[in-house]
Image (tube, rainbow, N blue to C red):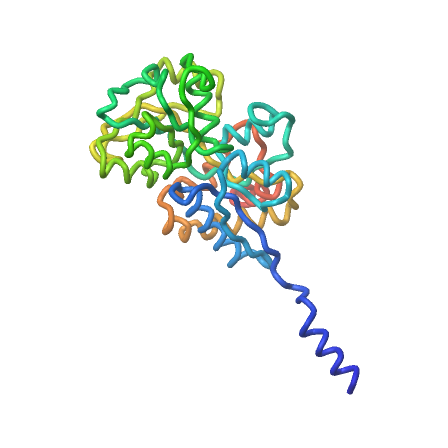
Length: 308
């Protein structure tokens, strides 16, 4: 009797052998698309992958997410493809090659270079000497902004007054006259740009064909893109640049985990699309959109199973 009571007591106080492990997925600021996308994926993984509980974590986005995935602080992160490519090759913000792989591509991010219409800023060259938000610190937006400005001969340390603000802070500062222009590299229809276009007359500064060609030559993760007219209130069609976002993971992730995360994501993508419209682009056919960084073997195993 005593032994039975002791056994029952131990069962009550000891953690269950099948207790779910707690993980996080790195996203971005709450005014962008990364956060709701990551939240939707976290719910799918928590509901569909055995013994896994995932929560979306607000971060400074791409660079921070990539670093934390490598450190083992996160199970996965959403990041811009150019940042993950830099990490894999040990370039840009990364001093050495990082052990990263991807599960699948998500959707393309678009470069929005914003200014109020009344500012008179109409080209990238006009940004010289201005006060500009380059994006949140340790974000893919900041990496892209600095690279794009450098490609047109503008040094962010010498030629502009640079500040580092997230999406919401950037549009608030623009509306309040605290900055002259700002970069938001986000999905088509990103909330921060949508909102300021409803309350202010804004310009999205175009990237010319020549500027695009010069930039893409040195930054092959990008491609040309035209934002259609009226995606944003009173903003016409604009030529710009795009780069695919991906799910970045550690190369040390087990094949089984990578397979389960990829399988559950694609099998339940309709649920994710109810939260974020851009997930319409998240398909097995687009999974390999980021050239230069290998998919995790577990993710590739699932994708291969679809064509057998």
